[in-house]
Length: 248
Image 1 (cartoon, helix red, strand yellow):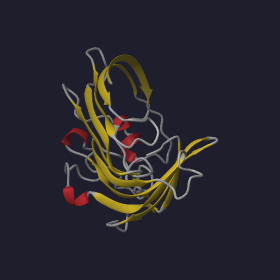
Image 2 (tube, helix red, strand yellow):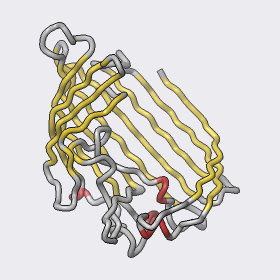
Image 3 (cartoon, helix red, strand yellow):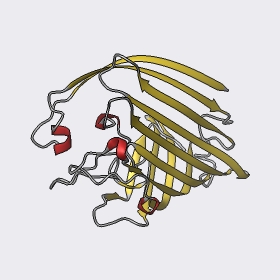
């Protein structure tokens, strides 16, 4: 089925920082922004099941923009698509893409940091700590800042568990994840964070591993054991990860 959704929202963002906040955020300490945000999205769902699908897919396109009268002028675009391909009885191959781009327009110089995309973690590139990938501050803390560009994808082979005891409530699989977030000139914080260089394909991070999902009595539980393939010395890795509320 297809679904079109329109939203209108009033966002009041107050920036309050402590002495441990990254320097580029401290620059906005005490600022307050009142924005009128309009959103439009379209989604299409052709999965044969909302839980453990074996065919079809789900994709979504969305746009969010501040309208005249707002303190900030920015636009955010996002696209996601996960598709399932049946291979044999009980064996499914899944491909996933998750993309995003944000830009400032009008008189704005910088896309707001509080609208940044992040990558890494159970719902992103597994094997890396949640929200740890991408540009970082240039101070001693070296904190991840997110970015205004997101590229994340995965390929996964999904199989049923052995035996019949959990055939309707569990799946396991093997995955390959790829992704990162980047900054371009729309989100540059010169001298405060990593240089804004746009998309650098050689900076995409990769991981492989095993995953499992179980419809437990307390809700859907997903676990993974990931192995980063091209982590650098500054990357924060985390091989074992789990998440409540998500299945394949």
